[in-house]
Length: 314
Image 1 (cartoon, helix red, strand yellow):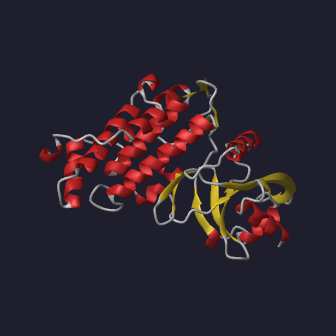
Image 2 (cartoon, one colour; image 1 turned 180 degrees about the vertical axis):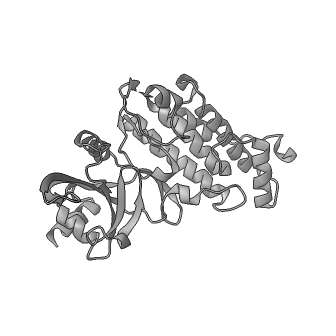
Image 3 (cartoon, rainbow, N blue to C red; image 1 turned 45 degrees about the vertical axis):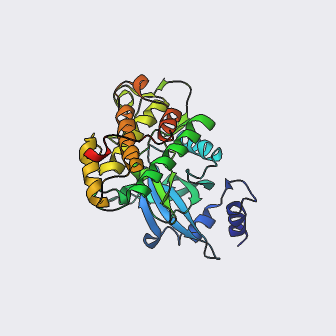
């Protein structure tokens, strides 16, 4: 109960995120039971943690002894998360790194070997509506345009905070790593396992990520920068516009939305859709220097409404 009280104080903002004991995280997840599992990815599984007062948190358990999650990358993720406090980024509550020995018996052998096991876990705020990939559809189904547009704005605001306020390159921006919270589907960026401080552009040897979202300079040469995240953002905007990562024809997109709206688009709707297509096209440029910065993207999105003579033709 004492450890749960500490976690409650962190949730209330009375304490900073802290090293949490493994027994606490085991207890609130029912010892990482299948019933509590709410997601999984390339580096670990996520469980629902339920406190005695009914408050829910998320516990991310890294795969044990997986070579892609070492102490260096785990500390880097914690370092990134410790700095973050923004409504469009998932809130970090604490971590656990616990080593212990266990015995294993090889099949067909009487020998018993002892191995060192390290549990690495993160505790995060629980987000109620799951990840964005579960909500992506074409124009004719699913989320309304206004909701999609607000999600785009929220992702951009979260990315601007990471880039400009915290100097963090996310490096794994994709719909699975954007959670949606509450009635208004507020987007929150999560999963900082590949994130790193931006020290201009640097080169990585071993590379991870998801095809279709990886910037070409990173996928082919390991070069990373803020513009790597901008490339990923372009793919996400295309998906929110039309359900596909491919470059859409703006007139076709508008026709399909007009069918959904059952009316010609208003000047504001027309402006939002066309601007999002333009931005995403620029984000997906092959050369990093040709892509806009996140501030330029937000500035373009927030320009005063421009009436368009094209509205009546779509």
